[in-house]
Length: 96
Image (cartoon, rainbow, N blue to C red; front, side, top):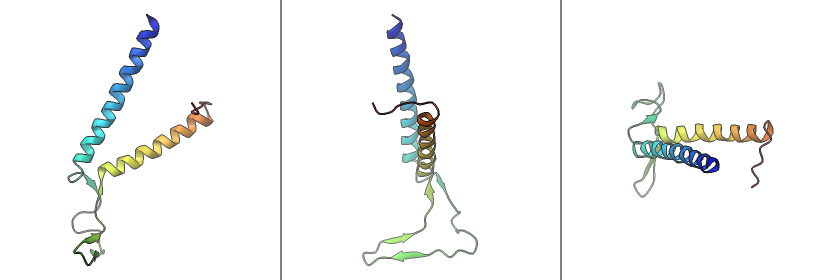
């Protein structure tokens, strides 16, 4: 029975881990209009709000960065560092 218990534990950790990460990512993506990083509405001090206007009526400017994107970039950088460390220091092979 021991191998089946180990497989069950691995499945449980993967399900809860990836499910929790997916749920957090979904919550951040859905709340991206409310949760952001950046300057307040007035912008940085001494910085004029510059917007490009296109012929079709589309405006483009420097907006705030959603928290979802900031966390995505941080997690991607951490994953890359851990991947390299696992390969270089611990000799893990990811070739399949």
